[in-house]
Image (cartoon, rainbow, N blue to C red):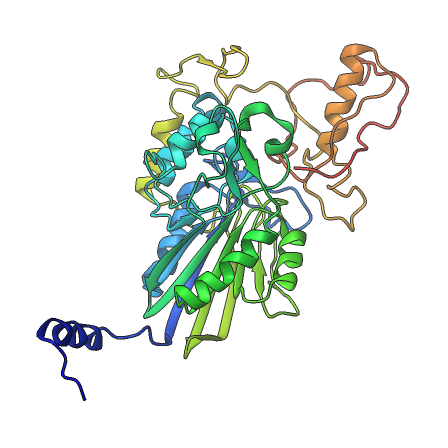
Length: 425
């Protein structure tokens, strides 16, 4: 037998000392937030599942996150997108109001949603791309590419990393990201130079990469493609353990489990629900799991530090000596009055977030739809007012008005269909 030269002998000893990836054993807890839509502070829930309490608010959401972290040290906080749009504070700061607060949360992974592209591709890159990353949330998106002007030199390259590998709890976890394929990216010029795909090709490509090359113990997909499409993807491409879903504001009080064994969850909207998914892995395979949905309401104490930060970023928007007129970045209009200025009262709950089985299903029509469509008719003298239907928007609770109520002060044209349209968000 030939003897090894000294150099090759040393190399052999080094390689022999490097252990191969061993199948993992351990537990990890995934903390899911998503579809926050710029909601810094609590709001009412006037839907049929309401507890009668104020729900949401970043300070209470953080309290719940920290409670889970205190008892589940091996955890990851994952944000499933649609974060920096939906409130005046985010609109007038191009998302910075939410970024300033959420940067304190320690987000471990983020999949951008359709509304996270609202302020244009330059702002998106400024916030989320690794080179600048003013929002260091570890954004991942396998189905987002540069495509033509103004990024022609990078056409075909991914805008964000497709996945991240996170070692936690004795496990190697592959976090695979998917952004939207609908909504603003398709309809709005703010995404010129970006291309979005449905995700099938990328999922087929990357599952083997994560399983065979990266040797992960869990594949966790963070996807803003919507619950229905995520179910389809999981059943078409086996190999994903968990999909943390977002987009259509579904609330999976119990996760969906596909025929391929993928666990899929979604956590509603506006920070009113948080998901906790504990995963047990044995010999590199998911062996058991436990899910808990946490309603975020005023039974939770506000975290003092986050509450103070929320007050700081809002002080120029609300009544007080710090109020400042803000300029809309899209049309130059000016916010001249504080956001807490009372402009009217409602005798009925205003919202468009109902369940599909109820008398006014929120996908098609809600009381806010009717209110807005009737306002359109009143102001224009039109016979028909229409507005797109979707499960979105802050709930407004009825309160007694201090003013006499007149039913004739704002006469409407004869009643016509006012809020019929296709689903969307």
